[in-house]
Amino acid sequence: MKAVKIILVAFLAIALGSSSYAQMHDHSKMNMSTPKVDSKMEMAESKVETIKVWGNCETCKTRIEKAAKVNGVSKATWDVKTKMLSLVYDPSKTNSDDIQKKITAVGHDTDKFRAEDKVYAKLPGCCQYDRKK
Image 1 (cartoon, rainbow, N blue to C red):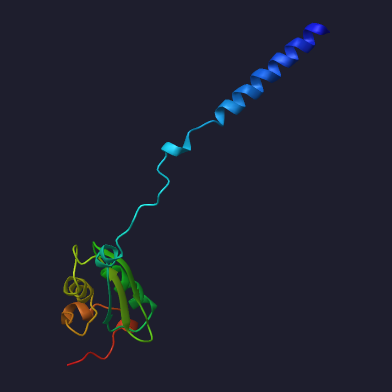
Image 2 (image 1 turned 90 degrees about the horizontal axis):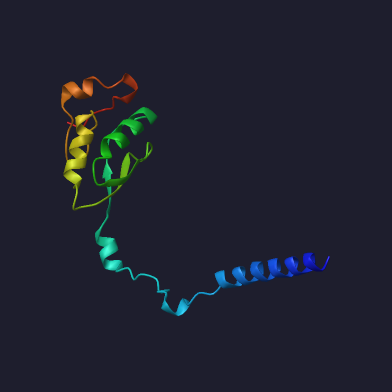
């Protein structure tokens, strides 16, 4: 019985000693500061723009948003009612003209560019709209 007590005490001493050792750490040497972010630099990385794009329905919405998501575009959302495409993109990777050309390539006109007639003619009937002259 005395041997069991000695073994139990030794086991507890080892267990408590090792767990308390695991908690010892010199935090004074750790870098606890948060990295500084230059807000001007962060703003320059993306540009927000709104573009008028003609279309009629949810099918148009899907087509327009997919065409607008070129390399550098992080967000493209087209509103069916207002016909406005909201973009967030990296101006070092793409620009508004390139995005609009991609949209006209799938058959939708923008304020600045007009889709080719033969591409527009291939749109489903529900997606064809009164084109500006």
